[in-house]
Image (tube, rainbow, N blue to C red; front, side, top):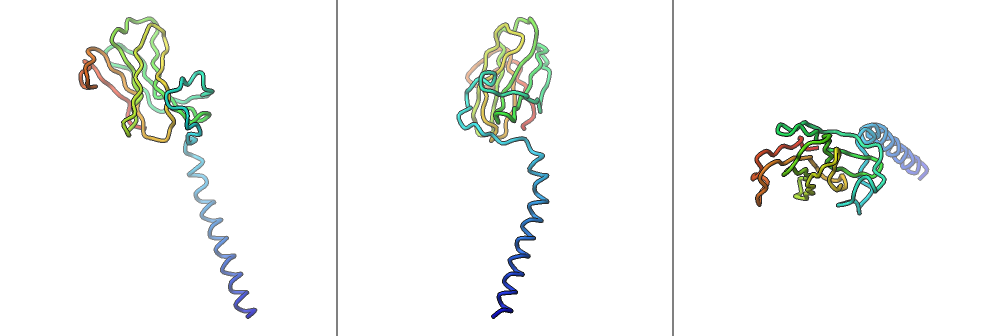
Length: 153
């Protein structure tokens, strides 16, 4: 009976050791990823008024038609993503920026005359990209004269 109890303790100890080894191997990989979204109510919220500080720009490009700088922005502080455009003083009539997710959610922002503008944000639990459209706006995104996007992230 004591022998069986000893073997049970040894098996449990080996199981705990194996679990600790797996955790030690997985921890650096998980820590290297951006923070997952903590804010479930952030879809459609302005990132500048929601505590989204220290953002990074994992994807960006300069548009071919109007030389706008388009960024896909991410903040680990709030777990949100949004699209931001930067261009000092330019007539951007008919220019829109978008935040699009692979599950079909889209936020569009018609650019005004500010040098920096952005879309509402969405929580970063999906694959997303930042897009820009210039020219004719029809019922479909393909109706823009120019439509460009970052790669998916």
